[in-house]
Structures are given as structure tokens and as C-alpha cells.
Amino acid sequence: MLIRHFQPSDAPALRAVFHDSIHALASANYSAAQLDAWAPAEHDTDGWLRRMQAIAPLVAEIEGEPAGFADLQTDGYIDMFFVSPRHARRGVGTALMRRLLDAAREAALASIYSNVSLTAEPFFAGHGFTVERRNEVAVRGAVLRNATMRRRLVETRSLD
Image 1 (cartoon, one colour):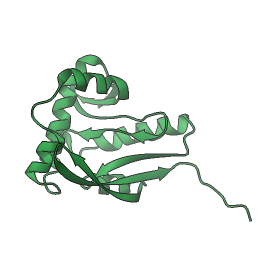
Image 2 (cartoon, one colour):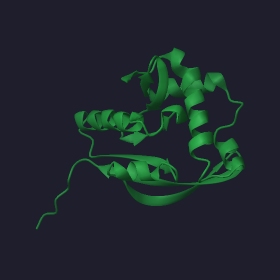
Image 3 (cartoon, one colour):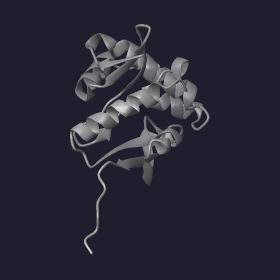
Image 4 (tube, helix red, strand yellow):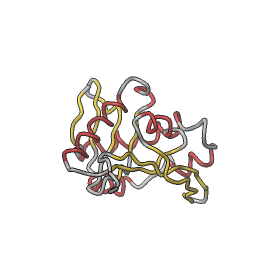
């Protein structure tokens, strides 16, 4: 597995990973209407490219094919973290998370956080994230539940 930086030519394949991941992996926790609202088949390809360029994700590649992607913003926010269902449960997510954690430590971030789907909660919890709050988010007429989860990287000590 190769983990590399995003290139604009990755945008269509990453959109497919995003769509397929949501529709295949999140279907146990969300209704068909919620999945369609979250990741509709029709989308703005230019808008998607702009978003990918803005968040600059890392891309996990297996045999020349994007298997997943994830980003880490300068404030520690993980905006997107998706693994293709074809490569799920094979270490792709863990490899991406390790790279994000390394980048966060290198940037001396105190913590990293994300708004995590119900489906992804166990994965994030397994990587040391805890739930800070539960959310209900309106997306294209559907309400989706998720959780804001955070992992502290720097221990804070109280002064006695």
C-alpha cells in the first residue's frame, strides 16, 4: 500500500470511494434516503475537485487504485475519512490514521477531532477518540446523526 498526497487527477476516483463507502458501509446505520442525501449519485464535479484541493487529503493506493483517503486540517480537524468497500477491514483506514496522527504530532497539535458517522464511531474509538457530543445534521432534506469525536495528543496536567 502506498500513501501519497492528493493529485487533481484523483478527484473522480475519490468521489467514487466516497459514494461507494457511504452506500455500502454505512447502510446498516442509515436509511436509503439518508444515504442518498449524504452521497447522491449526481454531484458537482468541479465543486468536488475544489473541495479535494482545499482539504488536500492523503490517498491510500493499492495496485494503482485509490483504496481510501483522509485529510487533516491545520486546526486538527479531519474533514473526510473514507475507505473503499473493496478494501475495507484490510488495514487501509489504520494506515491512514497512523499518517494523520504522525502529521498531527509533527505539527504539535494538542488534539485531533472529526464529525464521525455512526458507522465509523467504533473505528475512531479504537484509535483513541472519545465522543464529545452527539449531533443531528440536516443534509439535502434528511437528518443524519453523527458524533463529534476527539483524540487528545498532549496530556494536560492540573496544577496542584
